[in-house]
Length: 97
Image 1 (cartoon, one colour):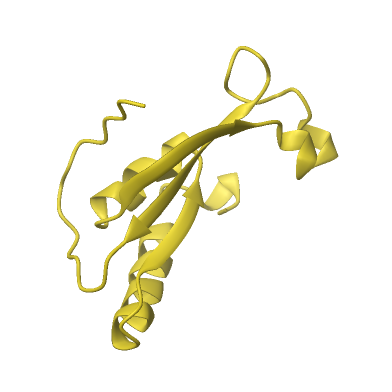
Image 2: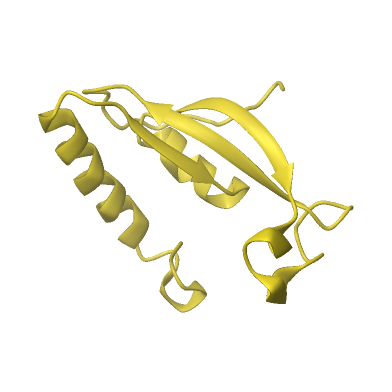
């Protein structure tokens, strides 16, 4: 995650591109777990949605318990995978799950 004060500056895109190039050099796919806002960026970098699950953030950070973006206080996480060599492109993320 990128601190809120550093979001929307392209840092996650740069980090993702670097990780993808390392994985490509080793012939390995890249995997991420993303929250909805970040899932859009990963999708534009060539990742595909493998699954979606909801979880209470309190499992990871007690300060966020019950403050997720879903009505029940949970947060949606997207498990995503990018195959070796897939190039970035402008795409619209839609989930039919």
